[in-house]
Image (cartoon, rainbow, N blue to C red; front, side, top):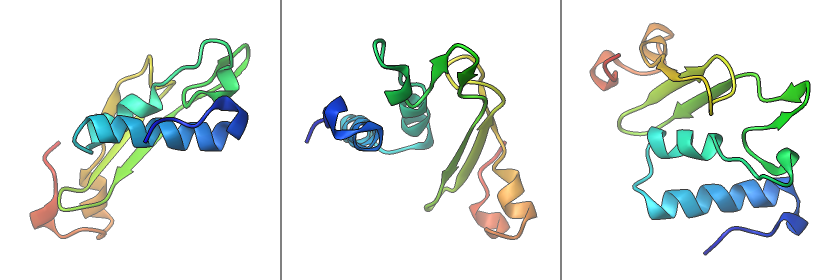
Length: 104
């Protein structure tokens, strides 16, 4: 399965990028972060990370649910700003027991 074409619309294209990326790598928060950094040179509004003059991606939040839950936040476009591990907040909010908490 590959990516959809841009003619299918941005949502279909982005879904295709996610499926392709996660098929190539073991699904993980890092693989999802890579998807969020994706750019389409000729069509910025079809990118997951948008740069279009004054308009664009201002931040990115990733929530990974599973045996090892993870929460990451980039304060800025994810292609330029590093993701910070915010996973301890999941425990602090009572969403996951401490034994499932991922170290910061």
